[in-house]
Image (cartoon, rainbow, N blue to C red; front, side, top):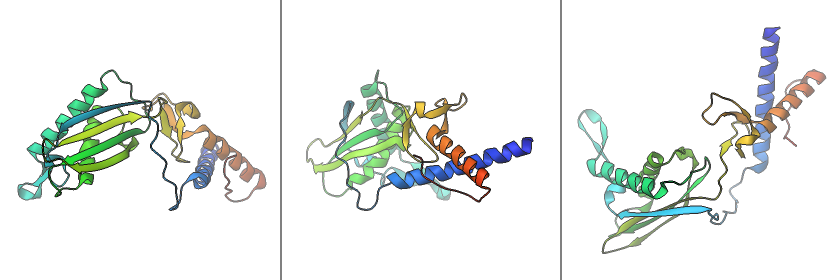
Length: 221
Protein backbone atom coordinates (compact mmCIF):
# COMPACT_ATOMS: atom_id res chain seq x y z
CA UNK A 1 0.00 0.00 0.00
CA UNK A 2 2.79 2.41 0.91
CA UNK A 3 4.64 1.65 -2.33
CA UNK A 4 1.44 2.23 -4.30
CA UNK A 5 0.90 5.61 -2.65
CA UNK A 6 4.49 6.62 -3.35
CA UNK A 7 4.12 5.62 -7.00
CA UNK A 8 0.86 7.59 -7.29
CA UNK A 9 2.50 10.64 -5.72
CA UNK A 10 5.38 10.38 -8.19
CA UNK A 11 2.92 10.23 -11.10
CA UNK A 12 1.11 13.33 -9.83
CA UNK A 13 4.44 15.12 -9.51
CA UNK A 14 5.43 14.22 -13.07
CA UNK A 15 2.05 15.31 -14.43
CA UNK A 16 2.27 18.59 -12.48
CA UNK A 17 5.68 19.22 -14.02
CA UNK A 18 4.25 18.55 -17.50
CA UNK A 19 1.37 20.94 -16.80
CA UNK A 20 3.83 23.60 -15.65
CA UNK A 21 5.93 23.23 -18.78
CA UNK A 22 2.80 23.59 -20.92
CA UNK A 23 1.75 26.72 -19.02
CA UNK A 24 5.23 28.17 -19.39
CA UNK A 25 5.14 27.55 -23.14
CA UNK A 26 2.04 29.74 -23.40
CA UNK A 27 3.58 32.81 -21.77
CA UNK A 28 7.28 32.74 -22.71
CA UNK A 29 8.44 35.40 -25.15
CA UNK A 30 10.17 34.98 -28.49
CA UNK A 31 12.99 36.81 -30.27
CA UNK A 32 10.33 39.28 -31.47
CA UNK A 33 9.42 40.27 -27.91
CA UNK A 34 8.48 43.90 -27.30
CA UNK A 35 10.68 45.23 -24.49
CA UNK A 36 8.55 46.66 -21.73
CA UNK A 37 8.92 50.27 -20.83
CA UNK A 38 10.55 51.24 -17.59
CA UNK A 39 8.36 49.97 -14.74
CA UNK A 40 6.73 52.58 -12.53
CA UNK A 41 8.52 52.19 -9.23
CA UNK A 42 6.69 52.41 -5.91
CA UNK A 43 9.90 53.46 -4.24
CA UNK A 44 13.48 54.16 -5.23
CA UNK A 45 16.71 55.36 -3.70
CA UNK A 46 19.91 56.59 -5.29
CA UNK A 47 23.51 56.61 -4.18
CA UNK A 48 26.67 58.17 -5.56
CA UNK A 49 30.28 57.13 -5.03
CA UNK A 50 33.45 58.39 -6.68
CA UNK A 51 34.15 56.45 -9.85
CA UNK A 52 37.28 54.35 -10.09
CA UNK A 53 38.18 51.63 -12.52
CA UNK A 54 38.53 49.38 -9.48
CA UNK A 55 34.77 48.75 -9.84
CA UNK A 56 35.29 47.21 -13.28
CA UNK A 57 35.32 43.42 -13.39
CA UNK A 58 38.45 43.67 -15.56
CA UNK A 59 40.33 45.24 -12.65
CA UNK A 60 38.95 43.66 -9.48
CA UNK A 61 40.81 40.34 -9.67
CA UNK A 62 44.49 39.47 -9.77
CA UNK A 63 46.41 36.23 -10.23
CA UNK A 64 48.42 35.14 -7.21
CA UNK A 65 51.13 32.52 -6.88
CA UNK A 66 50.16 28.93 -7.63
CA UNK A 67 47.42 30.19 -9.94
CA UNK A 68 45.06 31.45 -7.23
CA UNK A 69 42.66 34.23 -8.25
CA UNK A 70 42.23 36.92 -5.59
CA UNK A 71 40.18 40.07 -5.23
CA UNK A 72 42.33 43.18 -5.44
CA UNK A 73 42.39 45.37 -2.36
CA UNK A 74 41.08 48.38 -4.29
CA UNK A 75 38.28 46.29 -5.79
CA UNK A 76 37.24 45.00 -2.37
CA UNK A 77 37.26 48.51 -0.94
CA UNK A 78 35.12 49.83 -3.80
CA UNK A 79 32.60 47.04 -3.37
CA UNK A 80 32.42 47.53 0.39
CA UNK A 81 31.90 51.28 -0.09
CA UNK A 82 29.04 50.60 -2.50
CA UNK A 83 27.45 48.13 -0.10
CA UNK A 84 27.74 50.56 2.83
CA UNK A 85 26.13 53.38 0.85
CA UNK A 86 23.32 51.05 -0.25
CA UNK A 87 22.65 49.91 3.32
CA UNK A 88 22.49 53.52 4.48
CA UNK A 89 20.11 54.50 1.67
CA UNK A 90 17.87 51.49 2.33
CA UNK A 91 17.82 51.84 6.12
CA UNK A 92 14.24 51.41 7.35
CA UNK A 93 13.03 50.41 3.90
CA UNK A 94 11.23 47.09 3.48
CA UNK A 95 12.53 45.25 0.42
CA UNK A 96 9.97 42.77 -0.94
CA UNK A 97 10.95 39.31 -2.12
CA UNK A 98 10.42 40.30 -5.74
CA UNK A 99 12.23 41.91 -8.64
CA UNK A 100 14.68 44.59 -7.61
CA UNK A 101 15.30 47.14 -10.36
CA UNK A 102 18.73 48.71 -10.76
CA UNK A 103 19.69 51.90 -12.61
CA UNK A 104 23.37 52.57 -13.26
CA UNK A 105 25.03 55.70 -14.64
CA UNK A 106 28.79 55.44 -15.05
CA UNK A 107 30.75 58.66 -15.33
CA UNK A 108 34.09 57.70 -16.87
CA UNK A 109 37.07 60.06 -16.97
CA UNK A 110 37.96 58.75 -20.43
CA UNK A 111 36.70 56.33 -23.06
CA UNK A 112 38.87 53.37 -22.10
CA UNK A 113 36.63 51.32 -19.84
CA UNK A 114 33.33 49.54 -20.53
CA UNK A 115 30.29 50.62 -18.53
CA UNK A 116 28.87 47.08 -18.61
CA UNK A 117 31.86 45.86 -16.62
CA UNK A 118 30.63 47.61 -13.46
CA UNK A 119 27.40 45.58 -13.34
CA UNK A 120 28.97 42.60 -11.55
CA UNK A 121 30.45 44.72 -8.77
CA UNK A 122 27.25 46.73 -8.31
CA UNK A 123 25.21 43.53 -8.04
CA UNK A 124 27.71 41.94 -5.64
CA UNK A 125 27.49 45.01 -3.42
CA UNK A 126 23.70 45.05 -3.56
CA UNK A 127 23.55 41.35 -2.69
CA UNK A 128 25.47 42.15 0.49
CA UNK A 129 23.13 45.06 1.28
CA UNK A 130 19.66 43.53 0.86
CA UNK A 131 17.95 40.31 2.04
CA UNK A 132 16.86 39.43 -1.52
CA UNK A 133 18.79 36.92 -3.60
CA UNK A 134 20.53 38.36 -6.67
CA UNK A 135 18.43 36.12 -8.92
CA UNK A 136 15.75 38.80 -8.49
CA UNK A 137 17.97 41.65 -9.70
CA UNK A 138 17.01 43.38 -12.98
CA UNK A 139 18.89 46.11 -14.83
CA UNK A 140 16.37 48.83 -15.65
CA UNK A 141 18.86 51.29 -17.10
CA UNK A 142 22.59 51.26 -17.85
CA UNK A 143 24.19 54.40 -19.25
CA UNK A 144 27.51 56.17 -19.28
CA UNK A 145 29.04 59.55 -19.98
CA UNK A 146 32.48 61.13 -19.90
CA UNK A 147 33.12 63.33 -16.86
CA UNK A 148 36.57 64.90 -16.87
CA UNK A 149 36.25 66.25 -13.34
CA UNK A 150 35.02 64.34 -10.30
CA UNK A 151 33.50 61.33 -12.13
CA UNK A 152 30.96 59.36 -10.10
CA UNK A 153 29.15 56.07 -10.19
CA UNK A 154 25.42 56.58 -9.64
CA UNK A 155 23.22 53.64 -8.68
CA UNK A 156 19.44 53.66 -8.35
CA UNK A 157 17.53 50.88 -6.58
CA UNK A 158 13.77 50.41 -6.51
CA UNK A 159 10.77 48.12 -6.75
CA UNK A 160 7.44 48.32 -8.55
CA UNK A 161 5.56 46.15 -6.02
CA UNK A 162 5.43 45.41 -2.32
CA UNK A 163 4.22 41.82 -2.75
CA UNK A 164 6.45 38.95 -1.66
CA UNK A 165 6.56 36.42 -4.48
CA UNK A 166 8.21 33.20 -5.54
CA UNK A 167 8.93 31.53 -8.87
CA UNK A 168 7.10 28.24 -9.38
CA UNK A 169 9.62 25.51 -10.16
CA UNK A 170 7.15 23.89 -12.59
CA UNK A 171 5.63 26.73 -14.65
CA UNK A 172 8.34 29.32 -13.97
CA UNK A 173 5.81 32.07 -13.31
CA UNK A 174 6.23 34.67 -10.58
CA UNK A 175 3.34 34.32 -8.14
CA UNK A 176 2.40 35.67 -4.73
CA UNK A 177 3.16 33.43 -1.78
CA UNK A 178 -0.56 32.78 -1.29
CA UNK A 179 -0.48 30.78 -4.56
CA UNK A 180 1.73 28.13 -2.92
CA UNK A 181 1.15 25.49 -0.27
CA UNK A 182 2.49 26.37 3.16
CA UNK A 183 5.69 24.59 4.15
CA UNK A 184 7.10 25.43 7.54
CA UNK A 185 10.72 24.45 6.92
CA UNK A 186 11.23 26.39 3.67
CA UNK A 187 12.89 29.84 3.75
CA UNK A 188 9.70 31.64 2.69
CA UNK A 189 7.32 29.29 4.46
CA UNK A 190 5.83 27.88 1.26
CA UNK A 191 6.61 25.09 -1.20
CA UNK A 192 8.26 25.58 -4.59
CA UNK A 193 5.35 24.36 -6.76
CA UNK A 194 2.29 26.58 -7.19
CA UNK A 195 -1.17 25.26 -6.38
CA UNK A 196 -2.35 25.66 -9.99
CA UNK A 197 0.33 23.28 -11.28
CA UNK A 198 -0.37 20.83 -8.47
CA UNK A 199 -4.12 20.84 -9.20
CA UNK A 200 -3.56 20.35 -12.91
CA UNK A 201 -1.08 17.56 -12.17
CA UNK A 202 -3.66 15.74 -10.06
CA UNK A 203 -6.25 16.13 -12.82
CA UNK A 204 -3.88 14.78 -15.48
CA UNK A 205 -2.87 11.86 -13.26
CA UNK A 206 -6.55 11.06 -12.71
CA UNK A 207 -7.23 11.19 -16.45
CA UNK A 208 -4.28 8.89 -17.12
CA UNK A 209 -5.39 6.45 -14.43
CA UNK A 210 -8.99 6.40 -15.63
CA UNK A 211 -7.98 5.96 -19.26
CA UNK A 212 -5.29 3.41 -18.44
CA UNK A 213 -3.09 5.19 -20.98
CA UNK A 214 0.42 6.63 -21.05
CA UNK A 215 1.49 10.15 -20.12
CA UNK A 216 -0.92 12.96 -20.88
CA UNK A 217 -0.10 16.64 -21.10
CA UNK A 218 -2.08 19.81 -21.18
CA UNK A 219 -1.99 23.41 -20.16
CA UNK A 220 -3.78 24.47 -17.01
CA UNK A 221 -7.06 26.22 -17.55
